[in-house]
Length: 556
Image 1 (cartoon, rainbow, N blue to C red):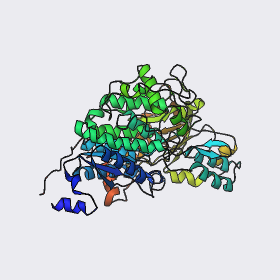
Image 2: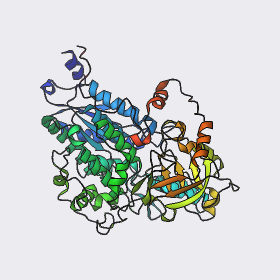
Image 3: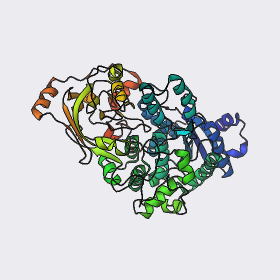
Image 4: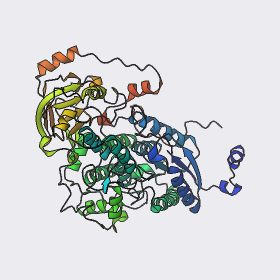
């Protein structure tokens, strides 16, 4: 009686307490996370579906980890959000949950939580923005920020023009409309089977975004009745599908870290090398920025992810029998998909980029536990390169001098940025694709090799080696590089080599001292004490695995 009476204070009638499924709607809506700001309306659509199917919907807020404003980086708080969502689901009397996310960290955080709790769950992402429009051309959020910055530095664009252009990139609700991390993770939530087919690509302001949300509300009630849980969906086959889909869409390198973290929660054995091995046979089918020409709105109207998955199934590149939130297989879901624009979504036989040009995993004495590079966003002439290192201990150190006309740098120089790993920054920020030195831009140089233990925005581009592991803060080989050392990048051979002999490296290692952490308490201390390295998804060591949905003890 006491619990019902407090719920009835919100105006719910007695009839909703008749034993019908209670559906939580976890929403990361927040004006501090612009990509998530519209999710209140999406939640209303979900509620309609839940009521329609005979459930009892209850919306609750979660934190929002928007990369646009959070400092030092939203990635520092992905694990905190995953922990919060997990405990909110477990602590409340819910039979199923709908996960509403928008920006790039909220989607994986919620999937991590759902995998750990293993209560019936379905994802609804908030959708991309409408295409940006500037002076008659399509411009992509994120991607054109970097391009306009280069134009400004080169003197080909004024500050006033940049100010006007920024509004042209953000003309509706939604997340980045390039194939950045937000769009990538929305697509991969669908590829994993945790989101309704066809729903990842609808623009945030399209009425079908809300139709999809309403359908998800109906579907979660059925999932509760069927006892369809994430553990039946998030299988090894599902993760292999997601890896191959990521290659086919030219997805973000950040997907690697997020999929590794989700797999760790689901108890699925997944390794960094799987991303290279499984993707090598997959061509890039989707011609989207930052690697291509088009944007998510075009991808949606061309047929969306269903077309990509159908083409991969027809080429025997996906596990067609994997179960999804529909209760049906992947093949059943996408069997009727049709493509309406073969320029945006190309055919396997005539791909946008050939197989083997997706994200590559590198090994070598500079990255013994691995590093990654997005080949489709890199310059072909730099994929095999040897150059002199110019080393910076922090990204801020580089930014302080990158405009110096006397900077000792040329087109062959390898820019090394360290101190950006999970523990060292902390949080592994998106600082790896530092802008080129201004003197190089003015000289007409369009790309240089950059190496870092941090991440890069999925909207970024360039020949950037990322996620170097172990990170420099742990004394990884990146900490031992000195300006003037020669570094060889050989992507076809999947190697990254510091051309310094072992005896000299041993001497440098003996002299190296670990940086003293300034954190003695609070969440950041917890993070730096327990965060895993990039090759394990940068999750907390104590959060891997499933903990179930039962509370430890019934206090009443």
